[in-house]
Each structure stands twice: as C-alpha cells, then as structure tokens.
Length: 365
Image (cartoon, rainbow, N blue to C red):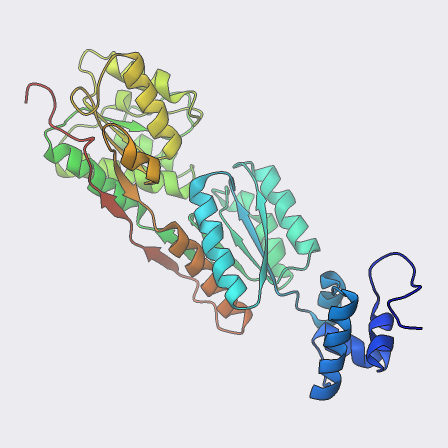
C-alpha cells in the first residue's frame, strides 16, 4: 500500500518518507537533516518523496543533531515602528539570501522583556542574535553574556553598549544631530528646543550634568543629545536646560513639553526632534498654539518617511539607512557564524539630511 494512504492523521514521518523513497530510515534522516553523505541518486529520491508526502523537517530536532538551526534571532524595541521594521527587512533579506530564517521579538524598551526574549532565542537554538538592546551599563547585560557563553554570537544594531566588547552596527547619530542643529543655527535660530532627552524628573542645570545623565540613557539618545550640544558650543550659544525635554519619552508628553518651551519669556523658535513620535507631538503642539511651521517655529526631525514629504510644509528630516543597517548587521553576524573572527568594532553608517521646507529664519529676522 502506498505510504500516503491509510496513514494516521498528522504530519508525515521520516520513516514514511523512507518507505516512499525505498531507502533506509538512516538514509532519509541524513538527507532531510542535511548531514552525512548520501549519493546524489538516493538524495533525489528522498527529496522527491518528501515533497510528495508534504514532509517538513523539524528544525529544532535537526539543530540538536547537527548543531546548526540556520536561524537568526532578532530582538528590537518595536517591530511596529517603521524604523525597526526597515531594519528587520534588511536583516531578513540578507539572511534569506544566505539560507537563514529569522525569528523576531519586540521588547518595547523593557529590559525584562529583552531578557525573556533572549532566553526564548537561546531555547530555540538560534545560530546568532542581533539585538537593539535597552541595556545601558554592565549591570544589565547578563542575558547577553549568557547567550555568548553558550557560543551564540551576538551583534548589536542601532545601539552600542559600552560594557560589551561586540560588533555594533549604528548610524552617525552625533554627527547627524549636529548637522541638523547647525542648519537651524545657520537660518538664524538661537532658541532651539531638543525633543526628547534623558528620562529625568528635571533637566540638569549644567551641560556637564546633562551629559552625565545622557551617559545613563540609551546610547542612541545620548549621542543625539551630544550632537545638539556640539552645535550650540560651536556657535557659542549658551546651554539652557529649559529647552531640553526630559522625563518619559512618549508622544503624549511631547505637546505639553513643546507648549512649555513656547510659553517661556524667551521662547523657542525652532525644535530638533530625535524620534518620529517627537515630530508628530511637536506638530500637534504647534497646531494647538495656532502657530505655523516654519513661519512661527522651524522643525527638523529624525527618521524620514513618505508622510514627511507630503506634509504641509514638507518636513526637513534626517534619513537613516534602515535597510542597510539591518543588512550590515546580518552580514557581520553571518560571517561570524561562518567562522570569521569577530572584529568587535563599531560599524558606522552615514545618515542623510533631507532638506525640504520646514526651516526658515525666525520671525522678524
């Protein structure tokens, strides 16, 4: 009786594939598991039988026998965020081209979620991990070291963690922020709001204090804040803590913070926004205050997108090479898996300032 008739319900087994192909179970197992030698003729028969029966290899069982799962684990803050969606697409495209699948998990910037996600990937026996980590110091990286201790190579993406000696693929956050703020300064602005900053109850009164706080924040956010301060220093513009948003970084908080800066006796005439949510929150604040951009308030933001180009006015934005960022992270990780010596360095990609119409000189200038 043919192997595909009268069989019990459920997925076909290796034994059934072997019977259909007319080979021993060991031969079928070697072929479908991708290990050991099988002659081309028998391999072809086994694969044809597997296709006929709809056999699908058990990836976990195969990884236990071969030590290779051909799977990468990816941990990002929020797969629903267009930035991370683009990064994951770059990872997926590159890994698929080299025969690897990807498992993607979101953490929402919660360290506990990141630890749990890392443990899931370890249990899934992934061959390597790419992670946009929320860790900021050596007390928060035990889960990443646990993966490394098990021989799982790790590459950081979008963020660096100073206490980890790992390859990290990032963009030029500090230079990008400096270039954006320099454009506002060149247009004549001196009162430039920074949205958003460290998650503190209030902004430190000094530049040094703010930088110390930034060092305890996500690496990306700290670098962008440093770029903002660099541009002010170069133009000899005094630092004003009232112009830096601090506290919880949510879109809902941004309008209130921008409104506060607009209500100052010497109010802001421009804002530099370091995230998409900061941009949309700032635009809401302008609308509530009855102000227009750029006539009343200029704006530059991070994370260019198609909607930024069709806004009125079209927004000047910093474009991050998101697909390239993910592709490079996957390339570095896959090379390590293939046996290349980890370079343990910062791989920095260039962003691009897309100039549109949201910057003009301050009113009266």
